[in-house]
Image (cartoon, rainbow, N blue to C red; front, side):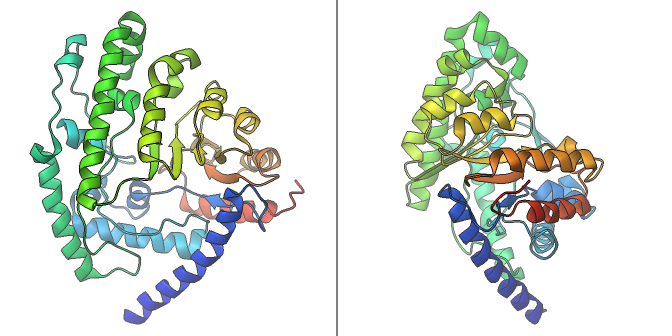
Length: 376
C-alpha cells in the first residue's frame, strides 16, 4: 500500500510538471506543444462512476475521501487531461446558500445537491434577514465537521494533496445567481421588469452577504483573497442591457475587491449576447463559457484577452464519441486554438451520463488533432 501511494505521488509530480508548463504557455496567449484539455468532472461524476449513492457521498466523510481518491487516481492514470487541481478536501457540493441562508438541501441521483427555494413572494425579498457568520449555526456545525474531517483524512493519508489544518470555508454565488438559488428564477426575472427597485435592493443585499462571509473566512485564514472565481449561472437568461443595469456593477465590484491578481468566471450559457460586455467591462484571466454558448462570438470578443474554456456540451457526448461529436471537436479547435489562449473543455461541468470511456477517447482524440501548429 505504501509503495502504491509513493508511485501515485511520483506519477502526479511528473504529470503536474508537464501540464503546468503547457497551461502557463496557454495563459500567456502563446502556442505550446498542443492545446490544454480540461475535463471538469468532480465528486458527483465520480460517485456515479463508482456506483455510490450521491447522498452517501456527500454525508459520509470516509466515503467522500474514498470516492475523491479513486476518481483522481482514474483521472491521473486513465483520463490524463491537463487539469492541475488535484487535491482532496471536504466536498459539500455547491450548497453555500443553503448554509448561509439556512435552506434545505435535496440529493437527486446523477447530479449535484440541490438547494430548495425558501422565498415565495415579493415581500419575502425585503424580509429576508442575514445571519452573521459567527452566529450562523449551520456554519458552526460545518466547522466542527471540517475539523473531524481533517483528523480523519490525516489518519487515512490518501496519496493526493490534502489540508492538514485550517478552517472550513465557502463562497456563495454572485448576486443574481444567489437570488435565483433562494427563489424560483422565473420570479426573479419577472421582478426585474415589474419591480426593478425591489430587485436592486435584494441584489445589493446578496452582494453585502457575499462580502460579509468572504471577509469572515478571509479573517479566519488570515489571508486576504486576491483571486476570485464567480459562478454566474443565471445572467445568461437576461438581456445585455439588463445585465448592465442589474448585474455588471456588482460582479465588477466583487472582482475589484477580491480578485486583484486573478479573475475567473463560469457562466452556464448561452452567453453569446453578453460576450461584448464581458470583454469590455471585466478583466477576466479565464472564462468558462458554458456548454450552451457558441465559440464564434466568444472567440470574436474574448480571444487574446481572456483564456477561453469550453467548446463542447455534455449532450454532444451522451451517445459516445460519434462522428458528429468528432466534427464539433474539429470545429472548436480550428476556430479557437490558433494563437493560444484556448483550453478545450466540456463547458460547465461533466455530468453523469457521459461515460468514462467516452471521456478517455475524447482526450486522446484532442491530443492527436490539437497539436500546434494547428492543421485541422
